[in-house]
Every structure is written in C-alpha cells, then in structure tokens.
Length: 226
Image 1: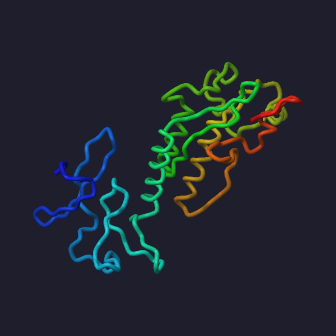
Image 2: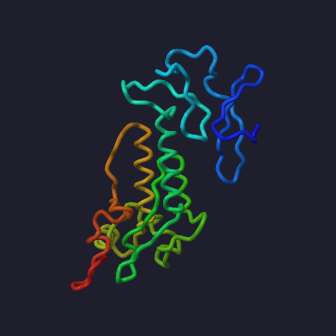
Image 3: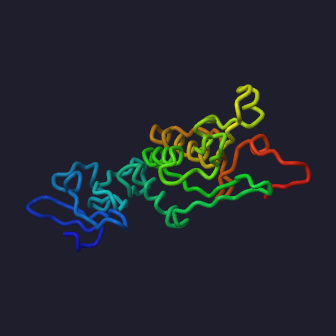
C-alpha cells in the first residue's frame, strides 16, 4: 500500500483509504478516509459533484462544503490549514533559529518560527524553559544556569524587578522565552476563535523583538541598536 503516491485514494473490501505523508523520518502509510465516501451526506458533495480529500497531505479526512458561496474550501478544518502554513514556514527558514545581539552583546531580536498548533507551541515553550534540547543561551549564575524566564516569568525589566523584589538578584530576561510564551498564548486563543495581543514581543519583518525595548534593554547615549 505504501508504494502508492501520497494523496492517492483507493478501495479495498468496501473500505476506502488514502495515502498520508508522515514526514521525512517515517514512511507514508494508508489510513481510512473519514467519513467513508459511501452514502455521504450533501455536506461533503462539492459543486463539481465529487468529494474532496483534505489538502493537508497528513490528514485522511474529507472536506465539507464551504459555508461561503464562491470560496472553495480545501482543508477539513482550520487546524489543518494552520499545520500546512507552519510547515511552509519551516521549509522556508529551514526550521532554524537566528539570534541577533546589540553592541552591548544583549539579545535584542530573533528569527523564531511561530507554531500554529496549540500543542506544538506549548511543547516548544516548555522544551526551552526546561532546557530539554539545549541550555538557554541567556542562562546565567543569577538564574541558576536555567532560562531566566523560570524566575522572571513576567519578563520584568531591571527597574521593575528592583522595585518588586527588594534585595533579590535580578535573573535577567530571555527574548526566546518571551517569544515562545507569546506564540503559545496566540495558539491557545486561536483554537477558541480569539485574537489577543502579544504580551511581551512584537514582529518586525522576520524578527521578533521586545515590545518595550527601551525598558528591557536600555542603551547608553550615543549607542544605537540596529
């Protein structure tokens, strides 16, 4: 079965299957179509008189008709569309991460793809926070060599930290932590059809930067940040 091309639909013993892509590390496999294209309700019969398989090559679902006249629906649900967008971003950027530092050696901008899946966004956030794949590049002695976000979860600036935490050492802030936390927040609310603002970071082109850059990373007079 797996010798068939991805997306091909076929029938065996009255049951219909489609070949789905499982990524580069895992071979493609056959999964049962859902719902089965026998005795389908009108919801799944499109204007061309046929049923359509989800355009997400990793999904075996059929696509319901669009509720908007004149707009062709290609994904079975919104989540599948977001998964495809996320994979396209990964391919374009190579899935990598770029860190940019200012003249004082401080991290002021990053290229870090946004995960549109709530589960994936949460996983990436905690992978960084817990140091599961690599140690946070902002880890330092004051943060016990963990990501500073563990001790400074609200991304307080040095001035705010000093005001709220008399006597305690400032653990610093982490732009990677803040960006991933904002990514997770947006993915969580997107699943609930809400679009809140980011708390700590803003996008400038491909880069994510601090919302309140001057407070988080103050510069001496005469020094300019790119």
